[in-house]
Length: 252
Image 1 (cartoon, rainbow, N blue to C red):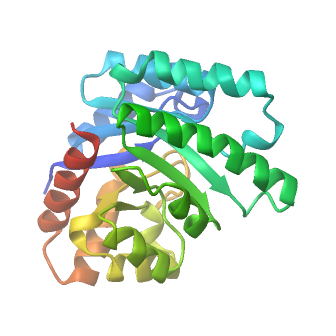
Image 2: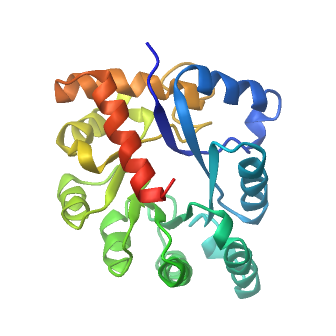
Image 3: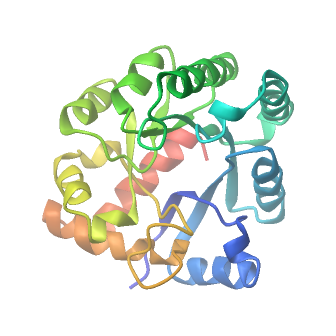
């Protein structure tokens, strides 16, 4: 049975989809994926994300600045990236992904530079009242504390602790559950504890596949089975609630 689902975070513009991008998108539609949020991470993918959203009316762009880039980005590159986002801010559903990654970046200098850049992204989201999509690996609590003035936050692919999750939810924000929920004990624990009214679903395609090989938006249906089981509700209830949340937070 097909449901109307929203994949709230993926990267269909990445090279892994060059061979069959259109077919991948059509498979998603046939699986019940009604709308897709495609997120940029750097200048190149911000541009390709924007083009993808202009080609398909049901794909929406968020333009971002990955924390993986921040430590080595020059001030000029940061300005160029932020200017591109600002120049296209009326065409996008949100800003991000952006944030902090303390898993891959462990030195004080790297983390301080990530914070410095993230502050500028936060200011941009605040100025234009756009939802902010956060990448906060091993730094969810720090990222959350930095974004106190933002009305709409989405913690993408959330993998932090349950207390920080509760703080995010208590502030009225959203947690995006990835297809990792199909096989990760920690993400299953998060899905069990996360209130449905604060939950989004995502594939983070082409990553985190619940099946063999490359992930794609059609596979988001796998998450429905697991979450419905944890919540002891029907799959359609999960699909409807998470889609309603995505429509609300991204103003779709």
